[in-house]
Length: 378
Ligand code: FNR
Image 1 (cartoon, rainbow, N blue to C red):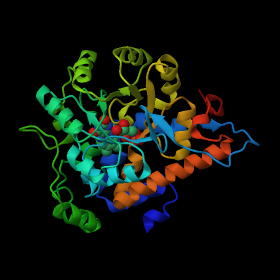
Image 2 (cartoon, rainbow, N blue to C red):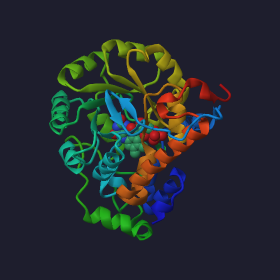
Image 3 (cartoon, helix red, strand yellow):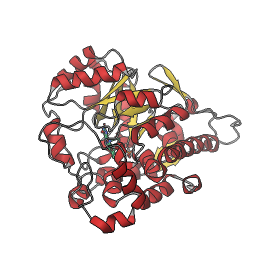
Image 4 (cartoon, rainbow, N blue to C red):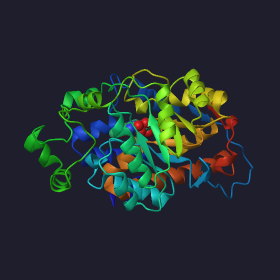
């Protein structure tokens, strides 16, 4: 009931904070080092100034767009997030089902806690994508691509901004382990969030991609598994091993975007990983127009980071994004109320997007133009 009463994503974030152990909430809510990349990504959306038309017929404001050759209900993609069953016991299945119902794509992470086959079974009518982190064991990468492909996933998102783990200081300070353990704050913590701990301790154990002898802290696990020597050349074997569409996520410079567009990828995601990797890196919304200008005629350009509302989606699309990836926003919904919480987030994003288009005097998301948005102070 509380989930239905949430008026915006910020309300769901507060609910999420109440319902999950602090270390779990902070794993989602936090970012790297001084958290400036994350704060700036959000702040850039605060600086959006709309220039609305008046006296336009906005009786209809359709939100549907084509992404990678396929129609979706609105320009939103649910971003890959690791360990999703830690946020709520239904985890990836709940998110995939909510995405299926809303007719937007869902991206399963390499660090997911549900297999590609189980995601496909949970949301057989959904458009399910797979995200790859290139790990040192090259055979494992190919196996993962095959499992995704066998599960019907036809879009691969290769994330390239994690040569090594970012330093997420909230996790370090909490001593977060994967899986979380009660030794962390003991009885007091369990008493504060009994429903979460009950679900967690009685649910399916948290299974995830790992390697022999890996430590149980996130950064240690990442650094042992991920291959820091990956280069653009590796995209070629990935390209040849993958028959579907290929997106590269984590582009933070125009020259890199040009280099990647030349390799022949189907799309680029302008992203700094939600500020969870390099702190003080390029702000996605600010960088977006330059990337679109440089490669937008050759490849689809997506925006990722800081999106918390449908008005944010409208702004990013006006500035040239094909669609927005959304990470924390749906995880707040998931932590607040499982599948219903994710559905609430998607309903809010849709309603906010429609209302923004109408108030902007723009009769549909595909009619958004650059001139309806100005970024103050830039
Ligand atoms: C992420 N992100 C991420 N990205 C990725 O490619 N693989 C992954 O496994 C994860 N895991 C992950 C976990 C959590 C808890 C968060 C919050 C984020 C990054 C994610 O895909 C996306 O880039 C950001 O979340 C976008 O920023 P916003 O929307 O959260 O501001």
